[in-house]
Length: 633
Ligand code: WT7
Image (cartoon, rainbow, N blue to C red; front, side):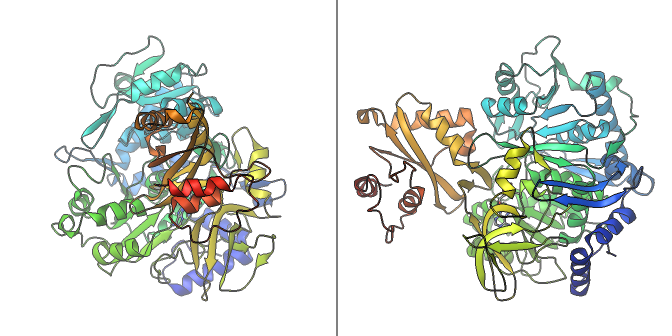
């Protein structure tokens, strides 16, 4: 059996034990007792990592929006579901009750239907952090359409490739958005993207900036007038447990971004259960996660996890630095936030501004604070603990991935303590394993290796859209019968895990997961460029920043202007987040005799850690190493 609330160490130990010894009974009990189903399952779990195939709650039917909204209407209809805090600190915040959310989601869902969207169709959402972003994805789920949210910081090229990869029929966007003192012109980016997207039949446009924008006749529709005429009632589509709920793209180390497919029932159960326990959510809490809904953190822990628990979830449109670096703390004070969940890069940026921007605010409402997205360094952990948590709020350092759908390794407040830079212990149902380079599992404590997961958990992604083979190769081929995470980790003497970082060519910049290959492809498109290699190096705010080594067709062309052009190209192809902090022009890149670029050496040079470069004599061109070192930045 399992209990929905893990309230102390004993309860964690009991729940963990049952979840491992008898996962079907455990998750079956959690699922049956805490959600509404239209039909029960035939079987809790069916799996095989070698195919790979995973299905949870097969045979069951449900709709996740009934669980997120309808079932709270009776007792909690007037409770605030979404508390929207706009970019402008002087504009009013907006409290959307569960009743109102129900109406707004239904109206939106009816508009989707009126534009021909049906169960199984893909709908791309490209919106700023405004309530319509949450409402539109719930509206898709209401009618069984599959949402694919693309972060509003991505470029036209990145948007177009994501729309085309999963063949979206509709795009939902806005006339623009506010980000601090700037506005972003989303519709013109979308228009540029749509030149490449023949599958899009209609575009719904939310008014946010009230700016004049061109609308394409019979393709683009303003949302507001349609909402006025739409009915407030929309029956929830009956979905099978394993019907896809959403697609979300994540960067790989090579090739195109991967459209991770998450399905309905398992995702729902795990998102809800992990939210409840990791944040120790109680009915009067005001929970705030600062992520964008364009990332998995926003899907699972701004929208689905909190709403499934009937919580009040804060949605913030702006940035931490506007109108000044006290903004986060002013919001915590204003709404009496009890749980606050952010990223190490934000913590470092805020710590740099000094305590003057924290002290004016009363943040004593906080009970639990969290971090996610990349390893948190010791200094940032202590600053967060001392000055935000005031040493009384447990810090949940939550390790997980777009692919895992929910938090996998994290402290559970009240059950066991966190430890600086450690994600600590696996969540209920999660069985981690550390592997050595030869594929042998490292047993016991005080070991370091590659992090795998040995057993399926309910919210794992089931496939990569349109490419199951790639799913198999990326996650299930490195080690037999294991899911490989791409991360390295160590297990200390007490069995607690510390994530040491990616072991592949993915670099995490300000919490954004970036593959090196697409950035190199973008650079190589410049006519002056012969070849390039990107590596990460430690950066005091961003965690890692990008260093690009670029060889030119004609060395005489190297100039500051060319560096700017390269960054513009990257911005256009991928988005401004992928711009290089440093660019070094070089006449060659260190290569193995088989022609593989030795990124390990480039990484060391970029990190100014050249004391031990290892044996370079076997390289094809050892002489370039010296030259690159001399000119490094
Ligand atoms: C990668 C996944 C999951 C939401 C945000 C990122 C790194 C994530 C931690 C943490 C150390 C972390 C890993 C992981 N990561 N959380 N608490 N400590 N590293 O999702 O974009 O899919 O990135 O982020 O390297 O593999 P994502």
